[in-house]
Image 1 (cartoon, helix red, strand yellow):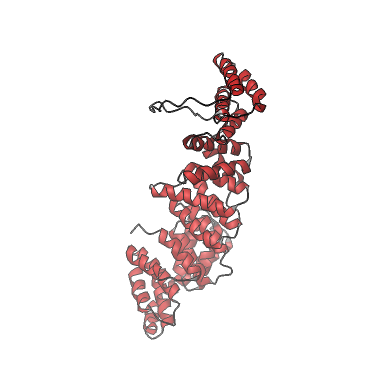
Image 2: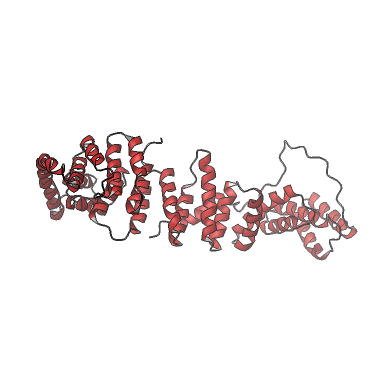
Length: 413
């Protein structure tokens, strides 16, 4: 299941690259650099420099670029020959808005032996961006790697580098770069761009990074806790669980319900069917009626009317039989779990919590199921800290996945 449109990968590029305009390489006004030492130039290069500067002063930047092209074969024998000619090309290319010549000049500059570390870092940013714009991913990658090796916390460059790594089919590197960009943003109390989270999750899905998929999805819904995000993220992990019994489907249904992520008819029908099968008709009736109210289910259709009617009749039976069931449950752990589930189903959460707690540590009862359902009941009764503690006791299988998502719905501790 693909969660991204082609436009999403494009959004990464459009949102962070240099664009068509030439970058502004002018020095900041407030900076007062030390007077530079006179450049060491060979006589042939000095002659080219004088000729080019005359053309530039006359506003003839096309002529200046042509002169520099003619001088391509002039030997660079002094240490500053290459950098000075490169900077002249950069200047005229900027004035001419010629990105081809601009990239040439910047590349010549970063490769020149006398360029300062500061300028090399600055220019490498633009070489990388310009190469990316024209889809020369190999060259772009070289300079993104160089830049990030010296400035590893530049978020924009991390994301741009991720687009290049994607084009070069390096999924682990894409995941790593996007994760670092997201972490840096979140460390400032800000979410990253939505497309970063979605693209990272898609990379994990497409490349079977099973150990990275759940963390990516959890990070996504934490950053964008919206019904659509939860629905898609939970659906993705459900698909990887294989065939699930109705007990597990009830727990997934409760998660979707709590997250407000029931956004299509099938989610309502699956949850209602599983709940009815497992003796939770009140939940089934509640779910079906909401689906009808939201016009995701057609309440006039015969099969839906019959489904609602069956849930309603079973609900009456459940409420009538709970007292007798409580008596029998005192000597049967399995019946005690049914009683706890029934009280939860009837929204009598305090009673449900009491019954769930009597089964803590009982070897007859699956403790992951118990703790997950205890957490649901605790949250519903406003006991969020206790709910978080119960979730911490869910250890494995699909219910651990559910617990991790459910924890994102609890208020911060």
